[in-house]
Length: 137
Image 1: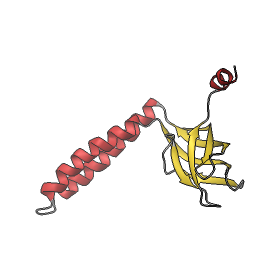
Image 2 (image 1 turned 60 degrees about the horizontal axis):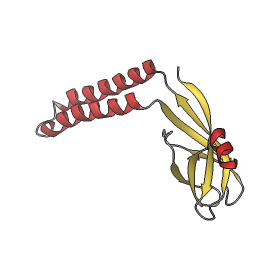
Image 3 (image 1 turned 30 degrees about the vertical axis):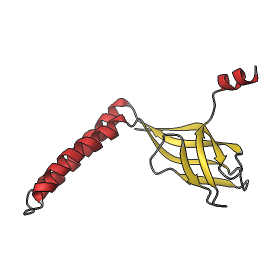
Image 4 (image 1 turned 90 degrees about the horizontal axis):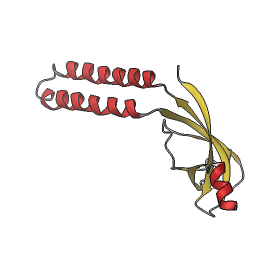
């Protein structure tokens, strides 16, 4: 079963450049789960390709498309070890507590709008403590 993890991130306002700390919830997959998800995706696309064989004329395009698309989609799922759920924190522009849905994407940086004030926010990885100590030295 996928493990729910919390990662420290920052919200950066595009309006004034301020940043605030936030956290991102994500699902982390093991190698076995990644493999299973990829094979399920491949099987689904290939079943659809098999059904498309029955469609006259269009099967010349649909079957190869689903066969190739299945391989590409399976490779993407195999390579994805985390899936984003949501990000929570304080908007640096309006200072309201906000929650942003992440559309299954856990890669940073990402850009979203604040649900309260509409400001464009950049979701960034929080700097490591070692980087902070080096910058302060």
